[in-house]
Length: 189
Image: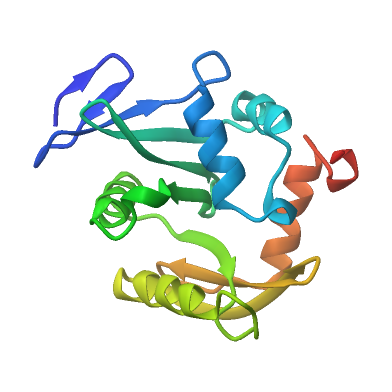
């Protein structure tokens, strides 16, 4: 794999990555963030950009040539890496980009416990089929459902993880307390 400044070129294809900072974030990334996740799961954009440096977030944008494909935001921690946000542009979904991005992220965090939350496939809702497909995608990629659930407003979330060990609600509380050191939901306007 070749490294060029803050760009990384995937060894097998022409997909590239770019590390995002508060100084180089662009409107395409913001638009995907604001459309890919339910509002109740979003930190307001300006607050999220501010948190990039404060929390040392690994915010990576993915491109196929000049085409913006998606992004990941990961919070690397000593005990596990939290896959905070992962999105692919809607018009590019189902074309293998999500698989390429997840493979890249798994390689970068290889050997570490990886954890994230997703909308639960067990909750009755309008997008149940989408949730089930997403859940199956992560299971195929080596994640397991921890059977730990939490709620954002009316949305039930399930915690998925890869690696040895367990993830408990106490781990979740520790993670949210770390976030509260930099930002709280009460700040959301």
